[in-house]
Image (cartoon, rainbow, N blue to C red; front, side):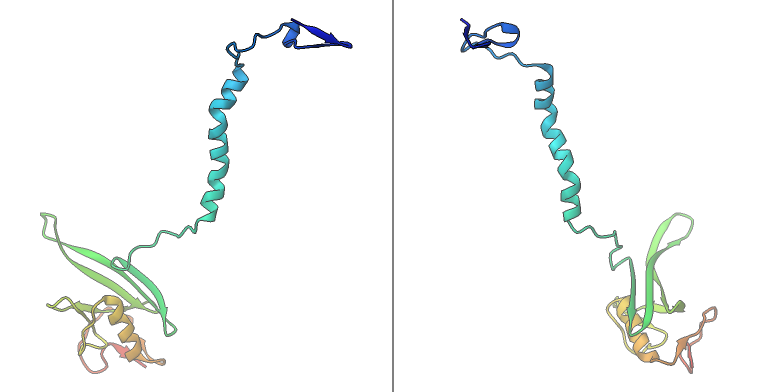
Length: 161
């Protein structure tokens, strides 16, 4: 039933057809697509906001693989390498390549698992980083490590003024 008030028909549906009360609602394709993809679009819009709000850290290797720091004005860098023994591919003990200001610091592993350096070989340290820091302490401000190439065990302990 259509009742007209003035020039406009009241109660008429689109194109003048009336809809019965309580009947199934007709959904358009646009409404269906908005219902399906609307939440996805909203979630996609918030992903960059959430990602930016979290503190993202650059992937850093763990301290048991590598370290790089400035200690008392000296640049200490170290990386663990694995020595392969024989042709059968047996993986041997890990070794460290450590430098102080770009010059190699020779470290040795003791039988108890601690480390010592050629600069301070009377004391042992829990980690290669601790041994490198102790070597920097022993060097002091005016001395440098030798450029490497030849290992020697005596006199000036691998340092020069």
